[in-house]
Length: 237
Ligand code: NAI
Image 1 (cartoon, rainbow, N blue to C red):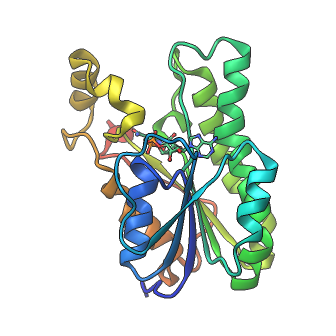
Image 2: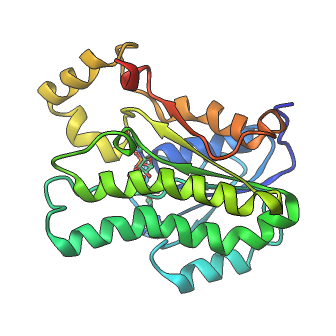
Image 3: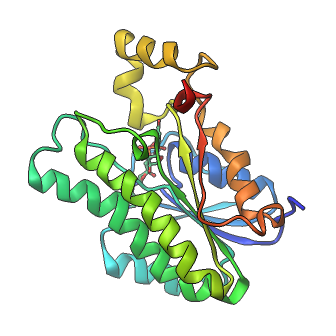
């Protein structure tokens, strides 16, 4: 019931960190995977075997159209593209940019991929955050965008269920990627995170893979509109 082999998957933000690990895991599970990210992205590694990379800017409708129109089939869309601009998000231009990438960018991809997903009875997994649930004094745009991801996920789950499209989200805890490098490098912040995490470690990008595979698989056939924390227990402590 976890078999997703032969399915076609698109992972935005698939060129770095969490998205790259999800792309690799979907490929290992037998999917045909396209990993898409900014052309100049400073990715954390080379694409996994079997993963095709593509350039994508989720804020640019033409870029999305180009990518979507090149796909002949799509079963799985994972929206992992995201940015944070800690300490700069009270600047309104920066605020709008973060929301544009994280929230509106997710909506753009969901809309562009909807027809192909409907053909297959496909599934979307959005990437939320701990800051879906908490406020963030240093990152109001990031927090607002990730809160919005939860509501977007639930809304699309309701709206598109009739087309056979399931829409869920994962909410990663603190994961060691380029996005959190500054926190990992700050002993006081890192210690504060670890002391509140019952499992007492930073998550790895690979920690997210199993949950995504579950949500895309027949095992989750009746699961839609959930936001699944994958956080080593951070939320409950
Ligand atoms: P990362 O910085 O390693 O990767 C970000 C990815 O997003 C890159 O592939 C980059 O090319 C892509 N991206 C950025 N702007 C884009 C744009 N305009 N168009 C297309 N692609 C764009 O970050 P990480 O940590 O792997 O984050 C992935 C997702 O996970 C993000 O949505 C982030 O908010 C979320 N997340 C990360 C957590 C962490 O602790 N690292 C915790 C919770 C959520």
